[in-house]
Length: 339
Image (cartoon, rainbow, N blue to C red; front, side, top):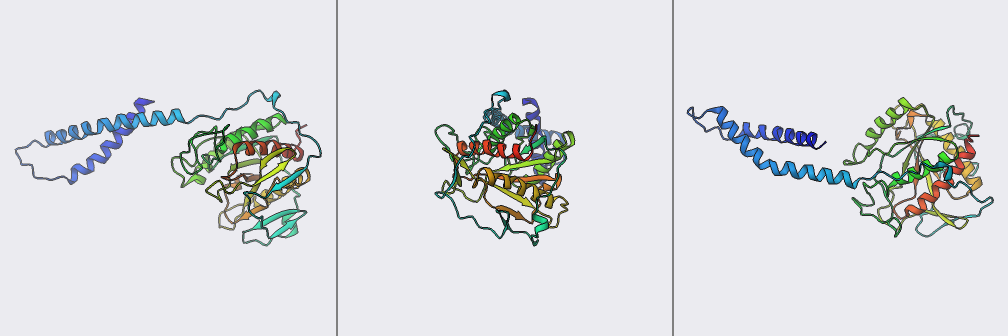
């Protein structure tokens, strides 16, 4: 791998050097051999670049060492999915913002930011999915992270962002994977970096990732797991108390074709989100914030049960988000029982 990287850096160096040669002073005389002249310039330039090449390779090797895969529990028989019945829930107002909405259906609040008028026909969750056993989880913004704690302390590589998947939203996806597997689901969890090293173009990259996954694993349930980016400090962390536990609140973000991109599945996506949130409201009122419906597509055209689920915000802790996954997985097991 090191040799390949050296070749890549070497090639980049040559490509950046040769245009410079063309622009250099052309004052050498006919007595100077052109080939010798160019070779001397190249040798000088490459000698200068030698240390840069070595340093670049060292930096990339250190970077690879710092990027750790999240620890996934493979002993699914020991996943504790037992949850007390009739548990009391209460939304915590501290570090929260008031939920706003434009529509309501059977207790489900929806903030409609799309161009569509939401009719009862659109909102009625009369949707049937074919394959509900296989679930795909991925992260368009893989590096999103949370407020550090003593148990989950880490060094940020950006504002509430980290390339260490044990402390980012990728870890939340791993915990959801473990819980869902304990309920009998087959889960494909892809932790590819789609927002690193460049944030711009994240959805284009995640589109290719999910298309590749779905070409090998057919699934109707595709979850893009995020952290809410509405805040950039630890002052916003929506939580709900469930029994004696504190969990980060969740939020569906559903796209449409209102932005002009083809999206034949958006009404099915919305119906599935409403169906899941109906059960969540029955079991754990306050676990979900209002559904947000937008004009953007968010790659949700790829499956009938595609969605974004925002898990907490910058002010939440990883512990709270992991707790949320225990309750989300229970809700999903009730909506899509696996026998």
